[in-house]
Amino acid sequence: MFEPLDPLLHSQLRLAVMSLLMNAAEADFNLIKEKTNATSGNLSVQLNKLKNAGYIKVHKTFKDNYPHTTCRITEKGIDAFEIYLNALRSYIKPTD
Image (cartoon, rainbow, N blue to C red):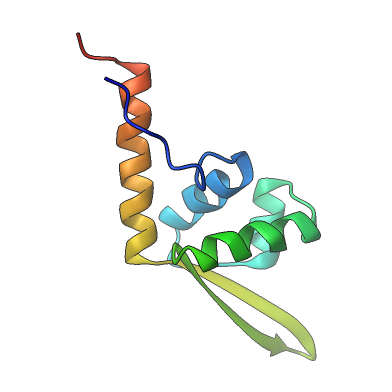
C-alpha cells in the first residue's frame, strides 16, 4: 500500500537541495545555502551524499581567487526525486 521512501531524499536539507535543483538548471553553493538556511559545513556534507549517490554533479572552480561550487541535478537525481514524490503521494492519498 505504501511505497518505500528513499532514505537519502527523506532528509529535510537534502530534499530542499533536490527541490531547488529540480527548478534551476544549476545553483551555486551560496544560493543553496541561502535558500535552505543551512550552515556551510552541513550543506557540504549533504551535497557530498547526494553527489556520491549520483543524484547531483558538483563542479568546483575558483572565481576571483575564491572557491566557487556549483551543483546540477543529474538524470538519476531527477528520476529519484520523481519516484520519491510518487511514493510520498501514497502516504498522502492511500488507495483502498
